[in-house]
Length: 292
Ligand code: SAM
Image (cartoon, rainbow, N blue to C red; front, side):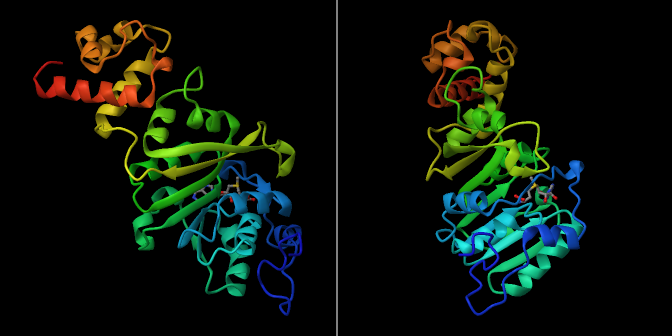
């Protein structure tokens, strides 16, 4: 290892890769706010994120938003055998082509929008997603991946800390629909925080790396749409007791809560994910019985 990723598994006989700062200068990669560009240039930190992703395990790593390629280099160095890197910024994609040319069997760069990218096209049942996500689309991307989680083996993702706390919370003020959805489908762990100083340019807030590992089956049975409806209703009025908060969902919240075995005086942020699933099942049964 060279410490700056410059020999990213390239072998001792290969000429070292240009330092990232030189790549950024040569390709004129001035960071663009509209694309959420905050680059990680510290090879130690890139290496830490890459190792947390265990890149040797999934058959394919999908890296979203590789930017100038700091994390991509670290993933190669950490043993990823096939990386598909999708980048929206044409300038960055052009810079990444140099890395692709060095590792043609291990790295494929796609210039495109990750929001429009269908993981199924990778034709692989064991995809590991790794990303220092653009903050403006991070949550949207996660929700999209959770909609079709089957081919995903793991997701190692950097978010704003506030979003990371919402994904991993099991109660309290950070707990909400995103927590329920993510934890219903995945084991979720916040691994470590990253200071704004680690990025160029520094963002306004602290970031956190989260690892999500999809469960073999959801944590408890529930229909996805019903779970969405009950969590929205419950957290939409999170300070109210559920017997009041769920009035918009059904004219008889007490009956619904009783059939789900949930205390009508509880509040949304004290229910477990399994409780929400019970509520979703009870609500669906009520719908099917013709009651609203
Ligand atoms: N991975 C790089 C790093 O750690 O230095 C860059 C991370 S930066 C926070 C986010 C990257 O995502 C940028 O390179 C940006 O151009 C890219 N990006 C933004 N929106 C995107 C989208 N919809 N699809 C793919 N890439 C996107």
